[in-house]
Amino acid sequence: MEAPRFYWPIKPLRANQLWGVLNPTVYSQFGFTRHNGIDMALAPDKTISAPVDATVVRKGFQPNGGGIFVGLISEPIDFPAFTNTTPDGAVVSFAPGTYRILVDFLHCESITVNEGDKVKAGDLIAIGDNTGFSTGPHCHTQWRRVTWDGKVINTFDKNDANNSFDPTQFFIGIYAADLPSLINTLRQQVAALTLRVAQLIKGRQAKPAITN
Image (cartoon, rainbow, N blue to C red; front, side, top):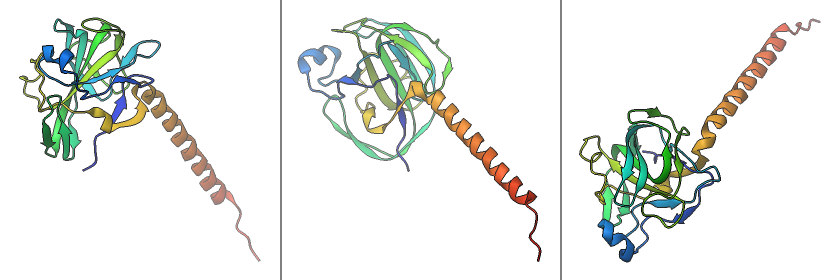
């Protein structure tokens, strides 16, 4: 089973603080000891794009430090087995299987989508900022591998350490915002190649046979 592929939600992707960094002084007030997400530096235009095909499942203001936020639940994704150290410091072995990914984006200025919207990887979902408990403009993202049971979706303040994971191991180096133009470029190249092949075949068929 191949590993899932996530596109970078911000261009350029630059992490101010990585997943799992130990800082109990700050994070104990939220119920854990390590950073349970990734702090990403914002792009100059502060745009945040969907990293996967997903459905918007929640948006609003999270009073426990998150500020203005939006949450996406992905389409089903196949995962291989892998081992993960949770924000609580526990080592968890994830069994292979098909799951959905719950991704939250916090500290936003505004959300450009509504609950129930279907988004494609690369679609604009939010404008980043510095709302909530934050020392400067950035986007805090939280990633959880979950099943679609409603219970997980409705417990925003819970750490869910046994389901959270570091997504950077699955980023493939393509910016989500560039994906539509990349796909369009590939389609143009395929169309041009198809036309060229057709021209070559037609030219060969039209070439007169050589007789002695």
